[in-house]
Length: 302
Figure 1: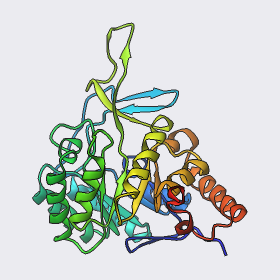
Figure 2 (figure 1 turned 180 degrees about the vertical axis):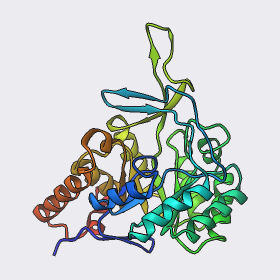
Figure 3 (figure 1 turned 30 degrees about the vertical axis):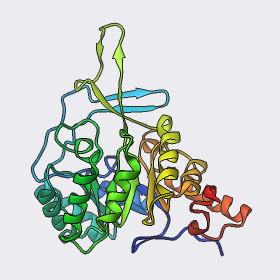
């Protein structure tokens, strides 16, 4: 019997699809809608200790092949977000709490709060390319990454995932640091640092000048990153970046991902994209003799 059920470091999901952080995950009601639309889990928007406004407009550039965004990690802070978590968790949503901070102590505090609020796992945002003092600025240093992951692991019992940046030549070193610190999985990749310029005004379009490129354009980079990480890691990999169809998802899984996240495609295709991807994967698996996601994971390495 063919099944889409997966177990990612103890996190049991009805299928391997997740809502990527920052997309339809700001409220309890929106998280419920994502689960009802077929997602196996929902990753919250990245939450910090205190409320944060983020960057001024414009914050988004729509392209033929994706988006460039420079939101700047706007969020209501962990205290206010607790109300949204309560709504989602009470409805049975499998919530992965995404958090960001500027030091390991704050990461640990936030992770503990997320666990107390009912998060089934936490995702450490070590990779945002457009927020000064957070994300990628910390996530390109294997020593810093190892310290953060180790600190968080000491603070919670739920699985700890680390979201990695592609904007580095040390991706595999960073992945190894997560594993050595006891991290339960890595998420690859976050957005690529990018820019768009208006010829008419001769100025960058985004208020922050640069942002993060997501969507179909980044998929080949994400697949390559997952393939590379799978060759050196024993912990699971969650693939993300440019997945819009079942074929994209299968590429990530065959490269080495145990699960995957979908973000930009929700904007283009709507929330039904999860059902479309899962139905297509299931049909493919039946046609080609794969009984489970585990059977497909990493087969491109053979």
